Image: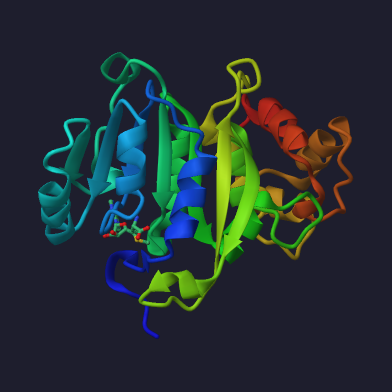
Length: 264
Ligand code: SAM
């Protein structure tokens, strides 16, 4: 089966939808942002539980149908926009930090995930992603799947696997199975790193730029810095320059980024 336009594989299994919404632990005080509501299977379950539900749907045809369907629900707002270009509401607009819920469109999972998690007005997110992407998000150091996506998620949040979903739960049926993950935003104390997200991203991108090479070679080539300087930096931080990047835990990458702050 060919990939669908705009990642439009709609969830048709009501019990999966109920499990997703239940996992978000919603209350009548919550503001929820649903990304890509589609035909509204999650929307209909979320709306009665929360103070406000903002649904951001890129497809004008689907957004029109949702406006018809939920026109009588005063707490539901349908926004016809590309989530990646939508100015996410601030804390002063929403009152409390928002909760995200989405069966994410697979073709732009990483950009949406990075944008949503780097936003500063959220508390939890329940996202369904392609199973292979879920494995990359949840990977432990030393695993083949551990890499830039794992570390960028950890910069902002603690992810936890909820459950897998069979491809048979969607229409049209996609080529892959899915996984539902709950992300909990790190506390202000946990995420008060003395480095910016941009610098951290640059450092990990350099380390994973040539996965099969040693971290010394990758970082030296990626950051255009001499090998002796990178060796000194790695040794100072207790990292063997001869290992591959997937063996370096998150906290070590933060320390490396701190030391590189004045150099790159
Ligand atoms: N939530 C519905 C469900 O579970 O059946 C639909 C999920 S479907 C996998 C992804 C939805 O995201 C589609 O409705 C698609 O039109 C929408 N979408 C795709 N790209 C988008 C974007 N950049 N911004 C907002 N919505 C998007």
